[in-house]
Length: 312
Ligand SMILES: NC(=O)c1ccc[n+]([C@@H]2O[C@H](COP(=O)([O-])OP(=O)(O)OC[C@H]3O[C@@H](n4cnc5c(N)ncnc54)[C@H](OP(=O)(O)O)[C@@H]3O)[C@@H](O)[C@H]2O)c1
Image (cartoon, rainbow, N blue to C red):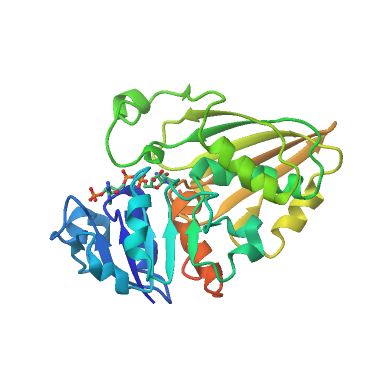
């Protein structure tokens, strides 16, 4: 299938290119940039040199003839583009523009399951949202949650995109840790939307932190439960190859650059503590968008995605 990426010079877009160039069934044929059309993709994303001769193109009518398009554009930019893609059989939007929107399927493959089969318009989840959903979703689905959930999360600097800002400037970020958007992060309503699909969505109190790493999200969720949590995770993730259950606590370095989510859960005295590690650009964005597309097309969900992290 001939596929295009819009926003190919951004962090999620270039990550989509990295995965799609190696995919057994997608052929990356179009890469779109509004600011750098006419330049070689590999000149803009040097890590892709030697792997592609594609030239960046403007967003134009040529995209309408593709079999699939991935959108990796900033907040608000995807919505005006989709009408021009109305003839494209599959559109996957990595931005927040279509999450839980009518006509779009929310693209969390492990928890949405059957709903993704045959989907033609997919809204890929946010990065923090993915980790929170994987930590809390199994317990909601099993009906075990008996009170408000509290969660903390740490994120790497690529979470805020390729344009430099105070929050990503190396001297300010590299030796620091700080909380932000305390109880106001935009992914909380998104997560509760998915949880409501699985059962009764509990209140969710979330405090994100910016961490001195470039990639990665580590979320810890504290969930009051009325039973033993392990079985809920066993049932939710049985046969799901991109979820790796850990008996020790998950670490960012094991998921860096991968499509995996490493997950642990322990329970004691009515409290479950679930910990999830993902790469925000991998399972938190590009790799999960491809996993959702694979699932929608009836392919192996892991096609093109089984790759280990380089450690150390
Ligand atoms: N970063 C993450 O960890 C992460 C995780 C999950 C989801 N997301 C979401 O994914 C989307 C992309 O995030 P990102 O981090 O990759 O951002 P980014 O690095 O800023 O990249 C966005 C790209 O979109 C292009 N663009 C800007 N305005 C455009 C427009 N009006 N029409 C078409 N293209 C436009 C830009 O490239 P040109 O100027 O070359 O066109 C830019 O490189 C965002 O909506 C974000 O919320 C990000």
